[in-house]
Image 1 (cartoon, rainbow, N blue to C red):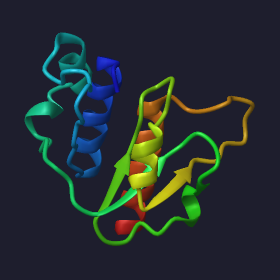
Image 2 (cartoon, rainbow, N blue to C red):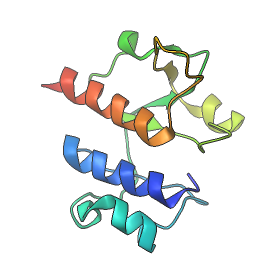
Image 3 (cartoon, one colour):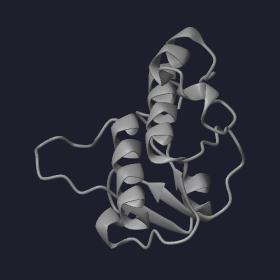
Length: 127
């Protein structure tokens, strides 16, 4: 994710749901002013670590509906860039691809919104 606002928002969302975050090379700097502001302080609570678990790539179209994807056990959501989504090689390295189904006319969700929905669903099923 190149947009620092999205990076910060996802870190804040991870904080809300008790998750950690792994940032890949080329990602926006989470300590930059825009990202740091979007974290609302969560950057100091959320572990930025290499994540282990079943890798579920979030894609705008063509994945299994997130509601049908197994989220038990350690789960890693893999998100791509806002405009381009997941690179092909990253998508192929995932254990499964999931799509968040929507009922409105929007083509897709913002990447931070998609991450928030996925973390909510993971948290809901975990509890």
